[in-house]
Length: 258
Ligand SMILES: NC(=O)c1ccc[n+]([C@@H]2O[C@H](COP(=O)([O-])OP(=O)(O)OC[C@H]3O[C@@H](n4cnc5c(N)ncnc54)[C@H](OP(=O)(O)O)[C@@H]3O)[C@@H](O)[C@H]2O)c1
Image (cartoon, rainbow, N blue to C red):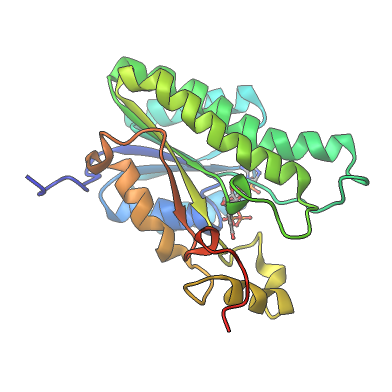
């Protein structure tokens, strides 16, 4: 009965922001699990670089998630190339750091457009295909800042967008469940990627280690198990769930442990 619960054999997956960091790790894991994988991001040379490591049964598309025409083209390209889309990972994102008193409206809009509106647009166009297929899996990558706020504030638009991603997950889970489309969110803690690279070797890196019950930062391997679960038949009765993969960070009150 459990034989092929976690198999992604011949499933078609699109991973936004799949040319870097967590998205690349997710794309590679899906390919290893037997899926036909499309990655998509704005930088063509980064797309090509990751495509080369995905093997021949893969594709890469230039995509700006904040641009609906671009989203439609990437979804159509995936379906043209592979005949369907079974799994969408809304992973594309950018960070931001500014006081609420200094944050300009354009930056606010850019961060909301990328992290939240992008997930909405990709869901909108992927779900139309999934509806006609009679099944689908949508995985939204939120953040610990989708459930709590940074200790000094500052990441205003990012925190609002990531909270919004969890709302988007729940409302779409409810609407799409009768269509056999499951929508779930992942809340990663701290992982070293391009987004967080500047923190390596700083005092902040060590304060994350102390603050995290697991006593370390996450790496790509830590997130892929949850992605494989949410992408596979193992999670067919799971929708609207928010799964933290943060080494216990958000379970803790955050006080020093000694
Ligand atoms: N690293 C962490 O500790 C951490 C923690 C919690 C949540 N997250 C979330 O995890 C996701 C992946 O982040 P990461 O850490 O792997 O960062 P990353 O290495 O900087 O990757 C971000 C990816 O998003 C893509 N992207 C950015 N803007 C885009 C746009 N407008 N359209 C399409 N693609 C776009 C980038 O590709 P292009 O630049 O080529 O477009 C890149 O592939 C993000 O949603 C992030 O918020 C990360």
